Image (cartoon, rainbow, N blue to C red; front, side, top):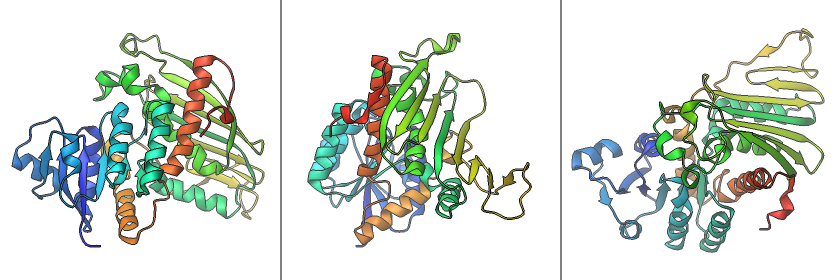
Length: 346
């Protein structure tokens, strides 16, 4: 198809991780930017890897950029949905930062627009591209854990005044919740590993008493229990008020073995000591720093998707499943009761 022209909207924290990955891919070029910022030609070239991209301040004009193939949405959470809808209606392929939306109604509107447009999409649940996730998928596919009946994924990442997004993240209309703004990565991991439908969720939440956490307009730690249709159970914790190093905990318990982060044990491997874990040399999710996220492999994959006309393995439809469960959890928190997924009609 030739050089794929990418337009990036929103030049904040997320874009600072996306832009180097686009510049490193030989099959695409960032040809347009949309931002409220005034940038010099030199600043634009520094962002795009030396390409003279056009800067727009108006999103509608940006979408009319000549030859634009892909829109990469890195804007604040609440405007992901309206921007994605407009881009889909304009026939642009979509790359969307998480969360897709901060309300269920906006998510449904996105679904309708993207399905109607028939464009390709990928959603930045980039952890699906890290070696640790690939290892887990292989371990499960080989049956080393047997029938997994318990999935536990925990996201611990303190987002306080020391962190760039704190100022806007504290607002309910912007961050949404601990789960929406951050812990949804852990929820998506459960959905990827379980690969089955959720039947019901229940949840509780709390906010730290620390003075620095009080500007948050929502609870900053939540825990949810998922009941899958086959009876399996999942647990997800999302904590953005913790004072500790970043932790992305993965614990899978099966009929033939257990995986715990970068260690495992299995009855299917002969010769193991019964009281000693097997250490697996892999790369886990070890930082909340955007530059440590695996954007390059996801962006490379999506450029190949566009060139070959196939959709991403983490397209909108796949990410929608995670977000539907996320909004069920939010409903459970708001109403103080278990919520069945069937209550969120699609």
